[in-house]
Image 1 (tube, chains in turn blue, yellow):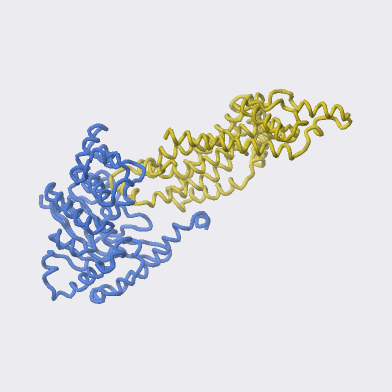
Image 2 (cartoon, helix red, strand yellow):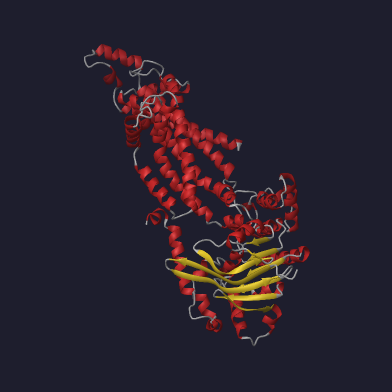
Length: 323
Length: 306
């Protein structure tokens, strides 16, 4: 097959609120082929996660995909027919591992049940075989005594183990593409390396394609062959990872490298990707070169307003409803 | 778990004991039953005779001891007015109250779950606004007034349902709806806001990313989390219904339960009967609390029973 596994073409995502419109993703295009690892890099709030969520149809109001296309094996996942198609392949052919394993698992169900759900839905397994397969999957992702851990609740597992569970859950549908949205950001440094190794190993073993979203250039250098760099909702450059790291003369190199250094200096900032999206300060700090390349309508201010509106909406409760 | 239940039961016993003490003390404080029960022109001898019958001529500690011994045997003495075993009367009336509370609270639970979840699915939509305003209105209306309103509309004007007494299912409708009214108002608010909170949780995103249907995501994943705070409120509502609303609702609808009985006992100053009612309600409150704790543990494994 000549077609790409995943094609994202001129994708536009906007968050429209009364306080203004935030252009979270602007004219983003890239492709992922079978078995390939693409790194999507950028600072917090650059639109990486929104891009990933758009692919899976997980953007929620006030966010909306306003333009472009997402194609899976050549067929669009947008529009009414696309949505129906997406609902069938989501969690099956196309799976995601989220950033924060502490909150991404349902606290009131055993991990075995949560993984088993995927097996029963997408692989048509009945209760018994699903239970056996869950243990296999937990073993595959390197969880010790998987039989006992299948009966554990998320709060009984460590952060690293929970992320392994998330990966097992993503693998349960036997996907062709795994989207890893900052899979190591919320974890301890020592665990981070283990999880990355696991993803790389599984990719080699299962022939997975991986879309790895991260702000850690070290991670990209280790795992990815191709890289796309996002800033302010746009892909600023894309190419082979080796090119990106080995051509210091490139003006765009400066930004991500400084970003990398900054991320290492302030590990606390690495948590809460979405929360800090509202703060333009980090962007202003070291991004002048790349900022100059952007359109004049920089979205940061708008995004700030949108975040404020979202907070007001969430916290308003009864009174907000009456207004 | 077993040890936990035993300990909770022991605590419950203490609560019930304290309630009996309070009941004993207050009934000795509100007035002299002899004044109430004997005609004004009774002679001193008659009064003394009557006091002796009730044991009121003994010292307070002795009276208290007799009272406690009676409580242990569920013997509260004879009702001062009805001249029958007080606990017997209460137990006879209990099924009617339990029926009313079950119907009213069952109705409240189902209705508020449905309305609250539907409202939360489209926050800010027309249904949500309607549900929020409606809930505020419902919880602002006192039961006796709701009851009178319902009687006026459905019994007097439309002549569809009986306005009082106990009989077939049609007798149950108006009192049960009255009892459910304010509870629905409060519960819809909590179900709605809890569901909104839960739907914003990352695990909901995970469920959707797994390819689960919206129905399963909301109905199974989010609902189980919602049920924890909702259960807390529902436990209180159940207790309030049993220990409070019944007195009002049963009186408005002349429903022959323990609430109506308690109301009459207060009016007649029938302290013995009142003691029996209060004691029984206290037992129910304790039992409901223990049951709720156990259900909690079954829903949320993170809750440690201690």
